[in-house]
Image (cartoon, rainbow, N blue to C red; front, side, top):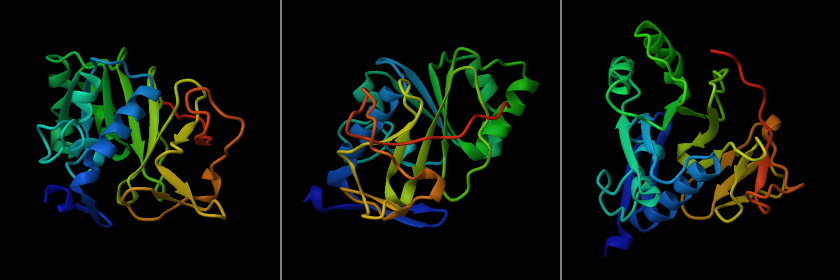
Length: 226
């Protein structure tokens, strides 16, 4: 049965095994993440990440077998996946001259190269919402953009916590995650490993944000200029 099939994705620190039956559950969550970050329906989104990232393989039903509706289908827009290797990031400025992107979702490690190549090509990023995804274990300074958002991403635990356009904090969606009793870790309700949270990222429940009144929220530090 298709629902019993498990897809396995290689990660830098191990593997992610995800049931095919859960793909659309997480694609809906990714669409929710984009919406809470202020991405409008019909948007054209570029993904500068590796193919094993949920941001990439949940991008469209055209990319992943057994995914019925990915991010593109749910937002009624377009998702164009661009690799995060330095060689591929070097091509992004020329692609930006050809495609009008509303948003770029960029892996944090690729941000410095993106900034460098766009400056060299005199290709501005103004007018594009730049969503920087960053891991919890290694959190390098994240560059600030005129229209920037951030999203915490832990692939092995399917943790995707977007920066809210309303409250400015990252939301841990209450319907998708549970906290351990001590609040030091998070686990997805459907698939994914336990994700330990750094001490300075302890979720807070109150006061609630109107964009997600029941969500846990994580305050994030100020942004560094590129």
